[in-house]
Length: 308
View 1 (cartoon, rainbow, N blue to C red):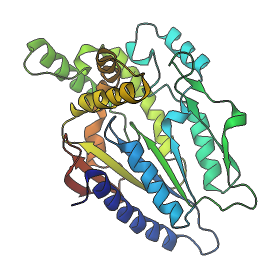
View 2 (spheres, helix red, strand yellow; view 1 turned 30 degrees about the vertical axis):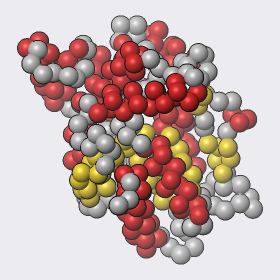
View 3 (cartoon, rainbow, N blue to C red; view 1 turned 180 degrees about the vertical axis):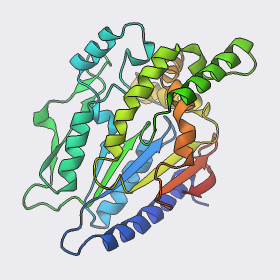
């Protein structure tokens, strides 16, 4: 039997080929626009490996493919520092990661340029800069695509941990937060982080997330399809990140400590609690079949496949 990574890859490749076929049928023969695929997955689930494998497969099949990460649209170090300084009491935005810490204008302009086939510089972000705080790579080092005499990009893969998250209305947000706080206070099996944060802090993330719809919906039609690698239990993200960092320490001699890993994941976890259920329900209204959800167990083997 194929291992977990191979099984996920085969399912995704089949799904994307099906979606590409539908896309080509909708386009005129002489004006086929690139196909935009979103890829979402919790940290440590193997999203980066899966995305790179998908891209390699389609390149080998002579389909010009590029991969963009929402991480590459993080604010510059100067802008992230300014954001944190402007909101010193909100622990969720003191470092990059959450909604509000990305340059949405840059993301929108990059995707729009790719859609019409223009020469496009692909942003890049160096997470090691400023002692791990990170910074955007200089423009001169960005890769350019769609240059003259080069194959035009036909498949654009945009991946990110929060891709496809949708903001909640305020009453739903408050209800989710109050439920989490009550569970924390009662102390009966609450393992989340939402209940440890102030309502105004998570509300700030929720408001910022409203702007992210334009990243996945920057055109008359939204990102045409989405692949979602989902954990059977969101708590697995802690174990998976610990595994990753242990490997880094062993192979490269550096990596976060176990305590640092927990603190790192804690900063993301409130968003998982708030926005995962909507993602699981489907992000494309009226676009049946455009989202593939792969639910995996702690061993990362597929437990369930759902096409929405």
